[in-house]
Length: 294
Image (cartoon, rainbow, N blue to C red; front, top):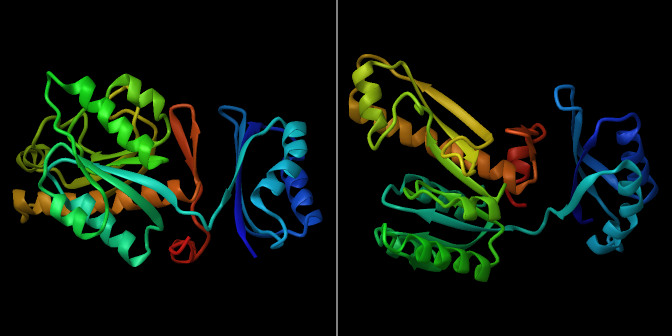
């Protein structure tokens, strides 16, 4: 039986869960996972339901039948075929730890995505990407050609049909226009020292200040640099016995892990924008493993 995921938001009201579950039951659907949140701060309701449908029911047929229910509840909704992998474009500069981690997780099936392009302003990882049979696009970016370079990037993204861009330590600031056009569809990873430790070498600054926790933040990209809605974060403890090099190594490890978890949540439609924040529904017990293959 095909597995679909229904995601929906609306103004909080009584009977939403009952209406959705009743519709699914009447249609012969079997719910396998469900999560919902009623946010009293915003008055919004969020729900995600995974369910199996009879093989005779196509995605288009289900969407057409559910439209009446959605209209009666005034839902903003979508239905996703969980067997279809999301098309992803990766952008990277000269730090390759996140790119290499994504490629490994993709290769073993831990990140069930369709990597349709890797874009870089350098050629450092061209051979690595090509060896994975993934199209590599070198688009040089300078102060003089930035608008033209970004137009080239968007052409690659659109031609490849990418539904998500992940900035795997891509060290160029995206324009407001691109951020708005791809709103909710660009994920960035950065060290969690911002704004305390800004600049090119935050781990060195953290070492010099003797911090005891370092970490990373994955967030959606907005026009406000590094201030978009947060999807995932984590930290790791540091002791006085560790060197500046240890800070870098440990920081890169936590960046890769946080980034992978954020991408995993997005591709399984578990992330909802809620103003300047996100609602992130966790996978069910054992869900990370069960979702690995889509």
